[in-house]
Image 1 (cartoon, helix red, strand yellow):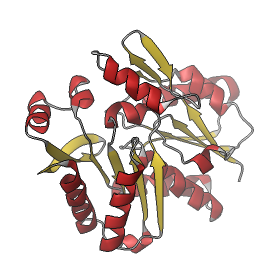
Image 2 (cartoon, rainbow, N blue to C red):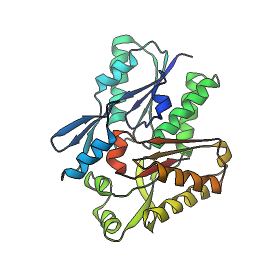
Image 3 (tube, rainbow, N blue to C red):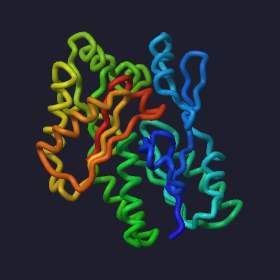
Image 4 (cartoon, rainbow, N blue to C red):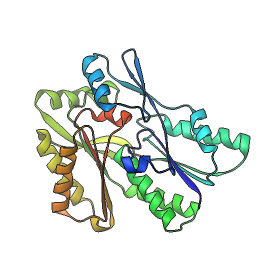
Length: 278
């Protein structure tokens, strides 16, 4: 099978996967005050975090145009799998769908599956790796699409962030949740239900919240020995390793992947945030 796995730039690829020609990123644009940053291979996380700290305005993101997706579909690969942010967080999914329509109007039908991840960051990567597994197993395009729809429903996303400020200011949380998290050093343990952010529990201090997150994940994880654990961190590999070690004490996994957030996930996770899927 000739294939390409295309993601918006919240598909937080590992350094190894960035070198794999089967993967392609369509960047979002990040806006901090008057400064625009393209979330591509030139993204400098340290410089971006410094820019955010020094600017009073909340960072924002803008999804790619449908034309950018259309151009990506104009490749030699016969089978294309597109993975985007949850529709509740970004317009990337709609842009990718319109891009498919534009492509087919000009070139005719092609095997293009646009998959809204109902997640972000580690969740998008988890789905991408599942697609690659199925391709390597010799599955057909249609079988892969059907499998991923089930996989997406079963996959669980969890995250704990140092700050909820960006999510609050961009309308993803209520002001009350963000107030308590900031004023009392209470860190909510968050998840996603069909792509919508929900609060599960809370703990005082980020380390306690992360450990509680691992316990919740394992409680609802089922037979984890057959699952892949993906952990994404924003500028804190030590914290990601701590979460990995805690998860390994609680269970076994067929594979564990740690990756670093690119621009979009850095906007929402903020410095030190952890996103995990199982």
